[in-house]
Length: 288
Ligand code: GLN
Image (tube, rainbow, N blue to C red; front, top):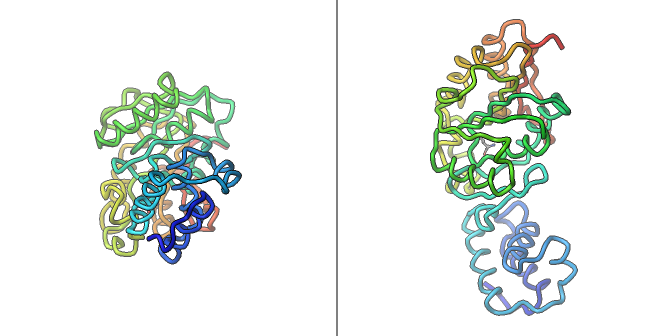
């Protein structure tokens, strides 16, 4: 790499794209994001100024990053941020890269609580993406977000402060609800680890080799952490409150059943994501 020495931004994007073909599922997007990162240009400028020269230092930086991408590092870790619900969230190896399907979990919650002022508990916040997105989209909500990983919480604190949500979001170092300050919350939302340990090998290499395993795996069926949460959640939800959980298409129905057992009489629904996969469980304890 490279097969020839590209002189312009457009040529450099093309060389990177070719390098990532067959390796990344999104070679052109990856090439564009890495080029944006080394040039400091935004998505439209990097296209509009395609004919501009790329100096040797930036070119070599771009090719280094492209090689790391080719070796499996997620783009978001290479460039240090990821778009999520209209925010740019800082990301690194301390937490999972926020996923587009998790934006749908946020959307499900926001649809229910738009214009209201719920007290929200987020369990397993990682780098704080869900908490920040909820603060952004529900400006009257107050959010307490916890994680058992101090490293992840440091990243979350960076995001909460950098995005200006310090007033709205409180972070707590907590194993599930253990250190949460309020007794009950109107909303409980979580994207806990849900991958079955035996599925390690079926994850994309960029996930299994680079993202924190503590945030991914939870026992033989992937539901160990959710089972522990479901022991605590009935005592921590306010009357009429709602719970929102992300899970995998392979354990959505099982999680739905466990939620029904924990909340008899509640309305429990399993929702598909934009890819058509059963991905979310919503549990409304209220009358509607
Ligand atoms: N969606 C992630 C994956 O399959 C898993 C996230 C999680 O376990 N919470 O890679």
